[in-house]
Image (cartoon, rainbow, N blue to C red):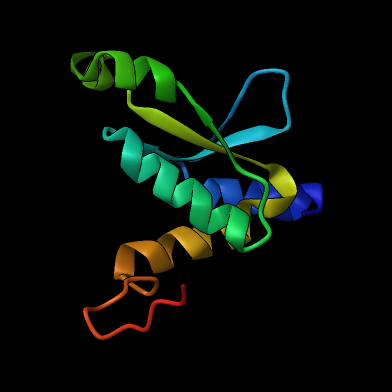
Length: 105
């Protein structure tokens, strides 16, 4: 994403913050580590490199989750917009399977 477009996108999405000194942005936060892992899996399946921060800390003691802000999902700047679209689809239930969905073995 070009710098001008990135700045405009970040202005429109104030919850997305950059890690200091890195080209990684916090695109989402989850209080439940399994939800963060699910989101990361959807992003990676869509071809978006995504990593989790603080997941192991949250799994060790879930009572720390609210104090630390939850598990952070991080993506590089060039993938911010597609990552936001994938996460919006996840929140809408676009990737949900119903009881009649075929499962390949």
